[in-house]
Image 1 (cartoon, helix red, strand yellow):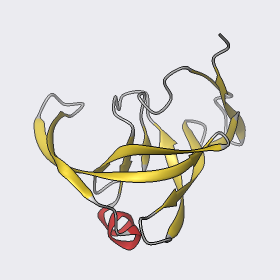
Image 2 (image 1 turned 120 degrees about the horizontal axis):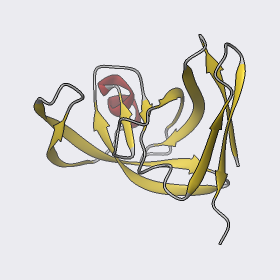
Image 3 (image 1 turned 180 degrees about the horizontal axis):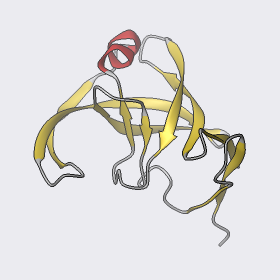
Amino acid sequence: MIDGAVLHGREGIIRLRLHGPNQTTNEVDAVVDSGFTSFLALRPETIAALGLPRKNVEPFILGDGSVVDLATYWVELDWDGAVRRVPVQSVNDAPLVGMEMMRNYHLSMEIWNGGHLQLTPRRP
């Protein structure tokens, strides 16, 4: 189970502990974004500080329908008691947790300032 909070009545936030390949770690508060279909998005300075290895450049369709090429890297992070290795896109915006990262989890949020957010693994 992963707990977070709802801030400003509308943004679900969870804290992520990220691991770089050279024993570097970083914690970020990431917005749960149901419109982002990939795993994670991080700022370029976070990616550089962690020394993440580059995977490739991939096209992504933005909310307005435009297509952009985004650099994609690999990151390891603590996720619900385990370490996962997932792709992460470099964006100049708030860190995002996308739908692919939350696959097979139930998301519940209290949509008010200070509300509770919880991700619970799907039961078989």
